[in-house]
Length: 627
Image 1 (cartoon, rainbow, N blue to C red):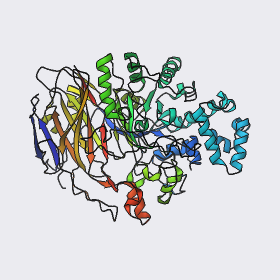
Image 2: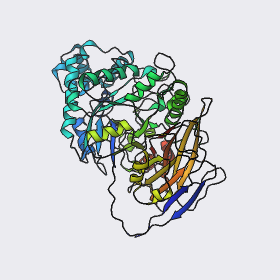
Image 3: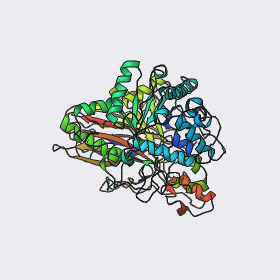
Image 4: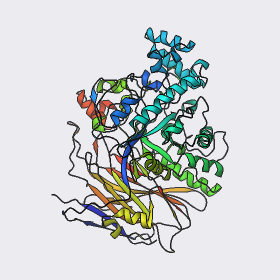
């Protein structure tokens, strides 16, 4: 057996700048006895739409219902609602939250099926006639106008209708929950889109019985996040239901998702910060509609900042059809803002905390798909589009997110990795609440991250990093308070490649901090990498190389490495200032799904307008230091 090369980046536990040294070791090929770890990583999707979402149904998904979504996630074959092809995941998921839009949830498929609760309403009868005449697009347009106005017709806003649809969702979720094997969460999406700017949240709960006592809060009830949190608080007290609300697609929020003011334009207070963090401990920062870690204009010295950048707002531009706007538009983002991206939001959180004593943006990070096909597909080699209309190579030109953004802009992403004791609702939900979760853009990169005050390279190498990490430190999502005098926080890091994906290029620590004047900064440290490369005087590392053959859509795993291990201490630590640290793990370059599609069409890779290859990645939740 060929031995695995592990790069060990060791560091003296000091505050001086030049205190890191790097060594490489080749471990024995003798297999060691497996070590029982206190937590295990579980993979899932917390953002998936079936045909119960109106935009999903009206853009090519008329058949993949909630039951199909769960069956597919569990590894069973399914018929793609757009292409009609038989599709299947390469590996089943461990958990799934079906999160159909709370607005018009289930109304369209039930109307088409002739459900009397809807078909006998005034609006239902009119829409049924329009469908019969082939005017489904106009029904969609009318639904969008209603969404934008916030005024749902009284006959479709019936508690009887909403309760019946919600009962279906809860029942199917309950039927597929299999503790220890496959976990389901009860959920929905609150779809607030003021002026076309994304403030959406998916809401998940482990409490199915309690879910029978309420109807989901949606943007017809209010478009303000504060009102959503108030409803979650009230409903929790009345029913016992627990919730986590997860913001998504902050990259197209026009700076509103992580703003410095509340929905009324008032400066954020400590009370606001505490309420937000109670209900929103985790953020979805990578998915099909782009990556929301950072942006080149916000992190100009970050060579990897321009990854799956998506800048199409959820509204139409001046020249667009004003009726076709939901989930897409031809308006471009009005310049990246600090409130749009996770890294700048984490920095902003430190700045606000310095002013008011509480941090509204102290969140963990996950990935999810936001697929509207009912099928959680996230792999570049097995990607089936966001909607039914863009599920095939030739369908990528369809204006699935009209009218400028097409299927070529959509990326295969993402996944949530959760460190939990077991695959059950209770255990996984607890991990979300304590933020011991992380994001990947699709590959199942196994990532450990612990912070403490007395870790060493021995702890990284001894094969039981988790024992040392939990015993003498905190895991990702945790907090470090002031440590021993003269010591910098030390971190244990272990990244293992997905066996079905590319080798690993490097591991980076992203640090953010705020100075005594309340101004925040960021810095990137390369802490572990493959091969014989060395850091230059500025701490930069040369590229790992690229083996992608664009003419064939293949690559070789003869560069990079299968795992990276490090013990690292902050060489620039100042014990007087607040800081956060998170990991970014990069794979070697591999083909983007659009390259496979252009090859299938026998066309040049540039046809897609997107890169032919990408460096997929994983992001840990941060560890914070507070004096």
